[in-house]
Image (cartoon, rainbow, N blue to C red):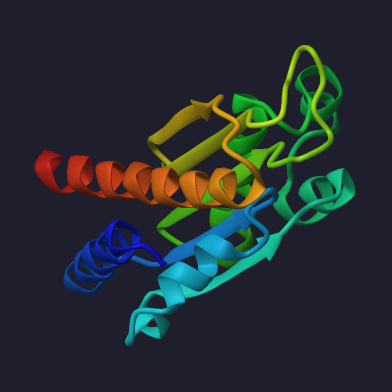
Length: 166
């Protein structure tokens, strides 16, 4: 875990402990890496309820409630899909917040429309979800690390915006 990622996870933990928020993850291309980073911080069991690694579309559909129409029209690697993954994780786990990742980490699997390194991220609560598209291919491991760091930053932004609005 990079120093920056560890710092982000610690900041998130402090906010979630202080505010009493709960969290879930819905991961595809990061395959549980986001959950591992969150749970590496002692005390995360006070707010982290669990996660789903959803590589297959049927898992996204059946467990995370991503609409079949969304997967058909937009594909698994899309803003629409990760937004629905966040909503589905919140519903499935009964949490305040969730994070989602879906992309093509590589080295294979890319297409002309969605090349390797295309990764969609989402984080937020039932009222507001932030999204981000990554497009750089730095190799599988770095793509996963970048997605993990960036989705943690999205969640931190979503939480800080919530605090500022209260």
